[in-house]
Amino acid sequence: MEDKSEIFSKRLLKAVILNIVLQCVLAVILVLLIQVEFLHPISWITSTLNDIFSWKMSLNVILLLLISFFQAYIYGTYYTMQIPKYFTRFAIFIHMFSLQNIIFMILYSLNGYFALSLYSSLAKGNYNVLKKNCEKYDGQCLTEQSLFLQFGGMWMGLFYFLNNHILSKSVLVFPHIYQEKFQQIKLVISNILATGFQHSIMPVIYYCIFYYLWGSKPRSVVSEVYGLYLEDPPLDNIINLLSSGIWIGLWFYTSLFFISVYTMKTVFNIVLTEPMKFPVQSNSAQNLASVLSGGAHFSGHLAAQDLKILSMTDPARRAEIFTLSQPGGHPRNWKNILDNCLHMINKFTSDLDSLSAEPKDGNYLQNKTLLNNTIPSTPLSPYSGTIRNMAQSPYLYKLQDESKSKQENVVVVKMKEEFNIFLKKLCQKPGINYLFGELTDTKLRCILIEAQPVMWTCEGLAHLTAASLKEDNYGLVQNDLPVIITSLINLKQSLDKLTKPGLVPRKHILNDSFTLKTKAAMLSSVKRSLYKIILTFSKYINEISLEPDILAVTQTFLLCKES
Image 1 (cartoon, rainbow, N blue to C red):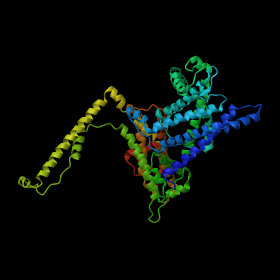
Image 2 (image 1 turned 90 degrees about the horizontal axis):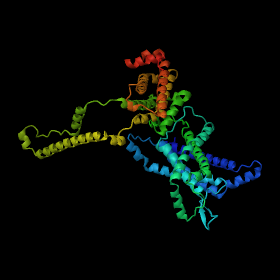
Image 3 (image 1 turned 120 degrees about the vertical axis):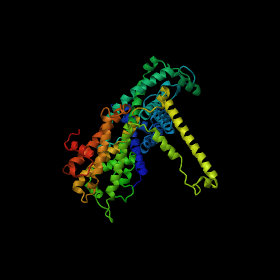
Image 4 (image 1 turned 30 degrees about the horizontal axis):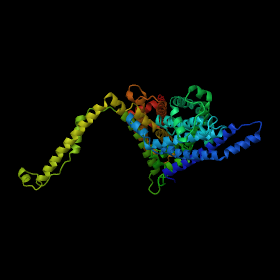
């Protein structure tokens, strides 16, 4: 069985290869559309093949695929690492200039530059070269339309990076029902085309405004470096820019760039989220229980997805979970899976509870405890009986030194407390609080981003528990029914605090659509899981040893009053 890094690496390589194939197909289709001649099909095919196999297009394709490969690798690393949690504007600002973001920004800019160079080289025109022979002067002149497109390509790559990786986070969304790869591509291709042409409008407008205001500076720099003249009307004039029509070409090429990037992202999501079967036996390497401990990591998502699928559709693997180990007769498979599932559910519940927990006024007790922990107690020496023995003790100077160190520790603790109080007061100032104050609903958003594997774990555990009524011949699951029901009800009650008004602080009220949908989906998943278990064991629910408050909650599910 492959380890966690090998699983991701193989899927990443498969996604890169499939993306390269789709990019080449997109380039060939573009050439066919540009060279279209219905009246002369033979010349159409000949010119198309000449353009496809020309050295200029080959060079652009190689550079574009090389950039796409490195970009894809860095793009994939977002899914192997845990999502960073930044709760202040200053921390977010510092993270914007991290080494990974800088490399990613450069790669996106280069990708946009080579993409527009490739697309412009396929068109019938001189928009892919900076120089041309002058008509009015002796020498070479600058082709400002080409300069406009090349800088526009770098801007489009930078715009996409800022919009999708800085202002918003890329989250790998696993589908609830997985379909075949090409079936998914066929379903989303029309949406990708429409979205690409629509999303390219605003960045083109922003770039035209920028070039109108500051376009003369890069034009003069390039002209001086290459010693070129300018005989065409400058494009930093609004009339010349509109009359040249180059902005239409920029919009078309930008749309193609966005379509290629969205295609890459779609291919990555399809390949990386493909379900995978893990061995159930606890003595196997990388078994289901051990991978489930990964939690919110990529492998943990796959394991939680596999748990849900096997609990609903795979009776043979369910039978492996309900078997006893030989020799010994211990339910290792079930216990290992249950422990990791409950750990994931209880951790998510405690994270939600920590948001609504109010700080208590216990400074005196905290300080006293802190002092007691800071000042170590020294063992009594054999001369500690009387003052005379102390005076005659050879440990007298040692005890005096320890007493001084105790006093110094008390002073250090007091200074730290005063410094922390000063920092809290300083952070309450309006300007400083804006930069260093905790952002509203940030913690809740970070918790809900990791809710997908918890949802699958709840549903998988519920279906396993329901199936055990007929398939568990040893009664393994029935012994753990109280703790399963209790954990799910505790999670439901923690989620209810986020939905019912007055039970959650105002700073934890969400506004963005993604986390709102995630919160609703999480609550719905937990309720479905509880309905599945409680209705299956409805005849025996009163015989299960549950706490009175937990048993009272189960009655609402028995009567189907929980919506």
